[in-house]
Length: 454
Image 1 (cartoon, one colour):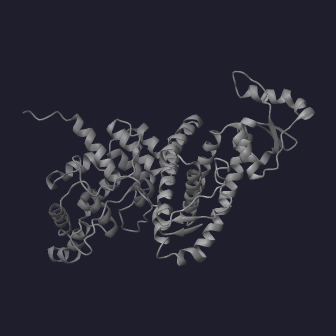
Image 2: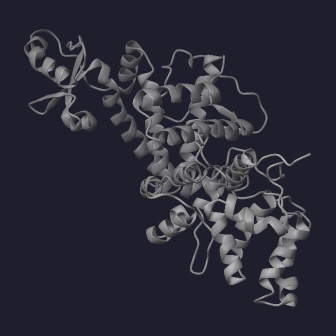
């Protein structure tokens, strides 16, 4: 796959004849425009993050099938089948490059791509599924004749044990080594005899997904080697910045401008912090009030958040000055801290209008000793997190639900569940940004406030 700057890419003529679901066995031999390199990856990332949220919320297989179908149509569909197929291929290989760079990234990408493949496969008809099995080159043949007849009674017992309303033995079964379908064996959904599992045609997904996951896992290791040995340095001025940014990409509003629900003044800040700040910002706010200081990471995380919720530059300077001068004095504050506050508001240096940090960036930060930034759901001890959630008013039941998500490393969903518990309403979109939490909170609180008398 060669990335170019502006030439229009012409799709190859044979893409339409390929299966609807690519297996990503080899990198595509095609030219890709630089704009497509990033845009295609972002669209696929929206799909994978939607899959991740669906799984974390415990959706059943049918609900996940519907979710994947909707996500794919929304972000990856193209009227031209060949262009859609190429977008599918390109976006996968770009994200493979993005997510090969650490064990944590690899684990997430492998799980989400496998889940996406599973549900896309389930949405295919049986003939299309068999074609994909053939494309993988799996050496499994259907059981026929006397062997199938001899197994029908035992196969029927398996079907009946699954509680199906109309227990019938399917017409097509595959004989495979039992260790290749561990999920079916674990849930006792297959007949096992002499080391072989007899997999029904409707269960082909389990057979194929095992192979798919194994292939992607090995491919990520090889891609990482290529990235570290050649690609990162060779593309340091072009592709490397894009690749390194994509894994922490936030795909929603940047909250660089305040809205009707994000406009706070210095006199209201304590009350608003208690009622509408997410836990990460509430913790930083309490610490600066308590210690009259924050290290650089905390100042950046909280300062940009406050900017995003509508705190004007003059008020921001007054807020930080009032706290820091209790510890460092006015002269040192003006010399060491005021410049960076004005810089965040685009009034110094390159005049860049910096945007508040999204959840993904906060979660992936690495606070050290004495730091208070980062995501509490990831970085707090269990005792400290429980205490913090208790101060936000969570019940024991609500707290246990949040802690379950934390143990499973679903930190954004833990924050979403906190939001739902605090405000007594669902948040189907999920919390992806601290400023989103603030705005949604303000909408709810203001809707409950009676209008002022005329």
